[in-house]
Amino acid sequence: MSQDLWSLEDIRAGGKRALARALSNIEANDGQLRTAHLLDEAARNAKAHVLGLTGPPGVGKSTLTNALIKQWRARGETVGVVAVDPSSRFSLGALLGDRTRLDTDPGDMGVFVRSMAARDRLGGLSHESLAAIILMRAVFDHVLVESVGIGQSEADIAFAADSIILCIQPGSGDSLQFMKAGIMELPDIVVVTKADMGAPARRAKVDVQGALSLALRTKDDWSVPVLMVCAPTGDGLGSLSAAVDDHHRHLLEHDDFSTQRSDQMRLWLADRIGLKFGKIGLAHAKLDEALRTASGPFEADYRITQELTQRLQS
Image 1: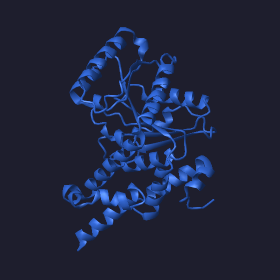
Image 2 (image 1 turned 180 degrees about the vertical axis):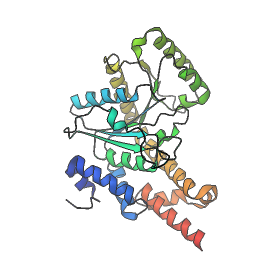
Image 3 (image 1 turned 120 degrees about the horizontal axis):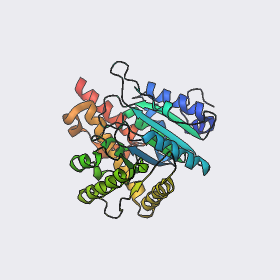
Image 4 (image 1 turned 135 degrees about the horizontal axis):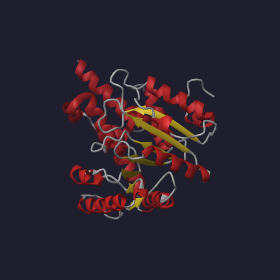
């Protein structure tokens, strides 16, 4: 196995330790061509269904993540988790360390959890997090992304997830806020957590269904289910698992899978170049040409960055 782990084959063969080292290499060598080539190779060889889990803090995302991991492992399927946390103002590292809240067996080679910092991304998904998702997507059967959960600024999750679950907590007023926020345009599945609360949970479900009826969704061929789940007791988990599988199957049957991922990569590339060079740089970047001629979006990012940097220096 290569010591530097720039081969996808070596990473797959090396298990959790190799994957952890590869992710550290990617973070340390961001902006290098070999990093771009590895990530583009991973993007071309993706096999996982990526599930994004978002919602306000305290809604129970980690508990739900634990439950989903156990269900997938019981079916013999492998799982990679990217747990995105708020950043420390000083170190820029993950502040909460979601890994400590996930009840996984360190000896289970079929589960890998990576805590990532949101850094300066209000939308909750840093470039490093996206790179980790892309690499894990080529290694595991499922990749679950638990976002930072800041409420109304969650659109970054759409850069990476195939299916998005929005979690709502009964009695919090979240569902009414989401009517104003427009976040109801994002989810493919909505989960009312802590369903054992009874009447407040049922009211939250009705509120969410009302908010969904007002949302300006672009995909009318999928009806967003609103499910009531109590993860600690397992109530509703079977329905949630079935809904996740149904949405994955829906994407495949309607040929939306590859189109959605291509659209995601173009949106990510535009966002990445805009962050580096601003609106003027983005206006001069030839995104479609770079995507057409490069090995993938990460090499396209490298090429555009080199070209615009040279222009600025000349």
